[in-house]
Length: 123
Image 1 (tube, helix red, strand yellow):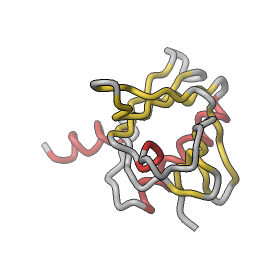
Image 2 (cartoon, rainbow, N blue to C red):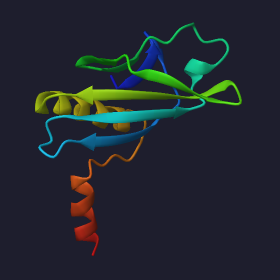
Image 3 (cartoon, one colour):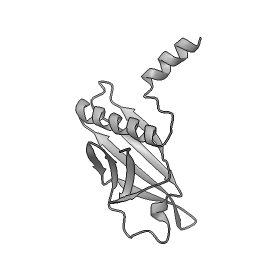
């Protein structure tokens, strides 16, 4: 089983989001901001009200209720969601999801630390 993002339980969102992460200096708390441009969840035939974003993988699901639509000319064009963690264990769980999501969607994924090592190796 791969990993999926859902706005309606049981319905995978096919649009891959842009994800930005911020962390506190000690690394224990932080958040990931997801931006979905023209997501399927906003299509006219979508199921109704979006109550949250569900990050689903073999370990279960992570849930955030912090989801808002971005409007352009009165029409919802993007969804922005924020997932917040408050402990190192929660962060590690989120990163396992992120890695599985990247793997199951053929995305390159770097957590920043690996990127520095790769840059050093490339020089």
